Image (cartoon, rainbow, N blue to C red; front, side, top):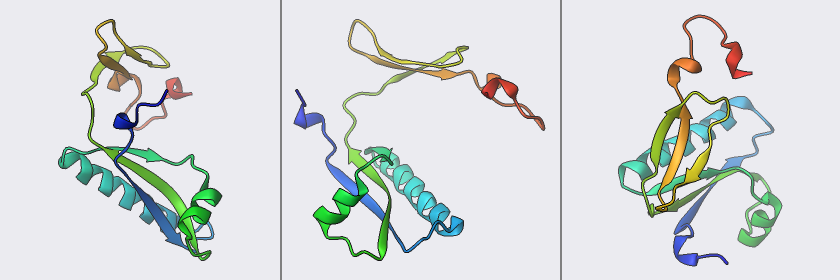
Length: 124
């Protein structure tokens, strides 16, 4: 059962004009998405970058002109909760909900994934 009250309030569909996989156009679109998400956060609005959508179906439903390509989508809404972040030394951190219903997001300790001037083999 889907709780519609927890569904996104709005979506932004980011379109590119005939990109033909040209890197500068795609990276400009990605930068625009990032900036929209940062501004949403600053205004207290939650966002989620959604790349896995049925692009052909969205094109059809919204009657998007053929010369425009969907890069990605941003789902927007007001957060229901503020997840807690835990630093862990796991290779694959997890997201879990404790017995009180609070969401915890495990993140790798920063020192375990970065290094200065060398490739970190632990990322593989």
